[in-house]
Image (cartoon, rainbow, N blue to C red; front, side):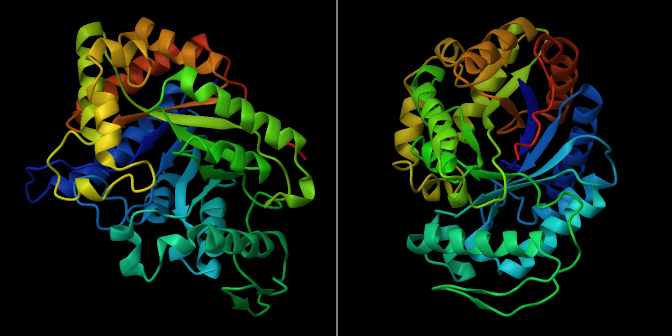
Length: 361
């Protein structure tokens, strides 16, 4: 099992003049602490216009800043919304991060499903999968080849150019796709990409889809992969908190999960989870469970280190390769995030194997 940290830079109201800038500075400090604690990955989402819910509109800039503050932790786009960016820009930003981090970039992609977020950027969600596929095909050629030979498709007619800089990782960084919907796991496998899910379903509910992912990626025609090699890895992120006081850790994690999954009064809450049945369906699933039931079902990860380890074990048994903690969520304090990072590094990570998975040629 590998371990990651994820953030959306959440900012529940009320705010002060310095709330937003402090949240950014805290995020940088948290990743530096995570690296020191033994975390192997950091992921940041891309979101636009979602006040309170996610202020991470320029993840490439955050990752660039972290590339100069860290040395070993992998820095992941989790994910780039491909249809709202020109393919040349995507390739340039991924390669620049790879250069600045000396080969630590992880290339996660998604298509964007919230009309509120993507329509102002000139994109129709119903075109998402097709445009994302074409964008990624073009970007891989740009990263792989010294001189991009050009690419023509339904949505693009891109001329040959030298796309610079060149990435450190050749032919390109590892590819991941957002798999917030369970059905996406098998689709990710057929494309040869790693999958990043979320623990809003139980390990038992998720396991068949992880199994389908394994079967798909191992049985797929590799000529159909988007990338040039398979990245057979499954990760999932969970709202989490790890404290010495087991009850407090449980309650803080569950409060964060409830806020994240829709039990909040953020004005844009109604616009979330457009492809998962709406925010009410998801929040109802969380709301039916008590805090102890959320912990027992490992849908929120919280408690003392022993409790957290038992929950991580459930996800490991379901087939997860990477447990990703979203510690900065809802009203969880910066101090609680830092303490969680320290305890996870001291008492959780050492209980699990942490050897990095090699690239599969």
